[in-house]
Structures are given as C-alpha cells and as structure tokens.
Length: 343
Image (cartoon, rainbow, N blue to C red; front, side):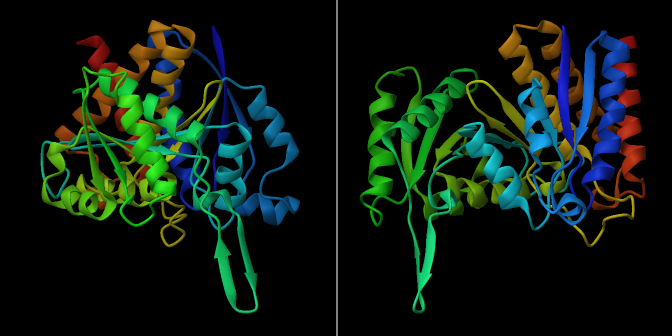
C-alpha cells in the first residue's frame, strides 16, 4: 500500500526539523520497502504573508486526500491552523507521551506516561467576547466529548500498565469539570481491569514534579492537558523531545508539542527528535488503522534508533549537550536504523 502523507513544514525551526525527518522517512522506504508519497502543503505565518491566509483551501483539500499529516510547528497563526484543523477533522484525542530517554538530563529517570487530552472543546473552542471592559469566555464541555476521550484513554491504558487518572477541578468548576469527572467514572465501570483514580489539576501538576514515575495514563480536558503536557515534557528533558498526535476516528495529524522557536530558526541547531518521534507515532497509527505490520515495524525501528542514538551520545544538538546540526542528528538516526536492521 502506498501512503500519501501531507507534510506541513511550518514556521521557524519547522522546515529544518522537517528536512531531518525526511531523511528518516527515506531510510524507512529503503529498509522496509514502505511506499510513501510525501506531499508538501503550506500553512502558518509564512503562508499567511505569502498568500493572505494561514490555511489555504488547497492545503485542506490535500489533507482530505491524504492518509495522514505530519506537521511542523507553526508561529502566531497556530490557532488558525492546528486548532482549526483539530475541529475541522474532529481530531478529538490529543495524545502526548512523556518518556525518559538515555543521556538526557531530566528531573527524574524511569518516567513513561501518556497524557490524553480532549482536543476539540473547552475554552479553546474560541467562544470569547469583550464588551465594555468585560471579557467573557465560554467553557464548552459535552457528555459526548467526555465519553469518547475517556474511552480512548481507557483503551490506551489496556495496552500499557492498566492505570489511569482523570484530572479535573470539579471542586470549583462543579458543572463543567463535574460532567467530565462523572462521565469518566461511568466509563470506568466498563473497564474493571483498569485501576482508576482522580486528581485535581493543581495536585496533578505537583505530582508530575514530585513523583512522575507513578503516572501511566492521564486523561483530562483541553486546557488542563495543554499545560500538563508541557510540564511533563520538561520533566523528561524538554520540549525538543516531545511528540504529539491529534487523532480522530478517520484521520490524524502528528506534530511536535513545542512552538516554532524563532530565536534559533535558521541556525540549524534545533533538535529534530520531537518531529521524528511524531513520525513514529504516525506509523503506529497507520499500522492500527490499516492493519499494516510494516508500519508498526517502522514505528518501532524509529523509536529504537532514537534511543540508541541518544545512548551513543556522539551526534547531539546543543540542547542535548552536543554540537551537531539538526540535519546531522537526523542523518545519524537514519543511519542508526540501518545498523539496527543489519545486526
């Protein structure tokens, strides 16, 4: 099967990360016989300056005609790009793993958790108004949204350590968070094999620092998940290593957690691992979606190559304590995949 992958290179360091990631994709084609059609599409700040819109209709049409999208970070127009795409394609599950990696300075070792964030509702729905010096924002939480994100998280927990915590603030936001908490409890009854618990978001933020190794799957609402996932990424070494997936029932977009880092753009020193690991998540999703063992093998090979490259510690970008360029780290991960296959 040939997979058509829409590639949004994005802004800032995005194009540099994309070039490094393409080396990995090309190597996967060579090593595993994967058939990939990479289609470049525009979106973001640079696209806005060039075309007058951050998300052209042609880009949307291309995404609709692709199997998945791999996206680089976008700048000031992020709300007009990824937030719009999440709602347009109903990508209700934002999945953000945080895992300790070798030779990476981190707050604590032995962390392996996933934050499952509802991705289409909450304050990020964009229902805001200002009138006579008063700003109003509506927090939209639906039972349907709560139930489907809870079920997604419980199914994921079944494939991991079978432990899940629902994070909310129902003691204060009694109606919106109350609905979320109540729905998670109801769904938990269908999963007696999963250890279920709840935490208030402030306590969860504290425990992510104090004992992150105790978490497995965290399920939460949109805004809380956005904040907690950045915190979790920093706990295990920084946003430069943090991948993410936006997943719906029919489509998915994969992207680094972080922004476009304009302060280091063009210097060739950005860490590409966040985008490379996002590609690994993409192949894992394609494997499940199309029952393709070769895609699963690709995902596992990329993850293993990243781990071994970090263990080796010879080709590292400045944020990891090295002097390598973005493209050099991408090339080393690609060559590491070949070494793993030959072993």
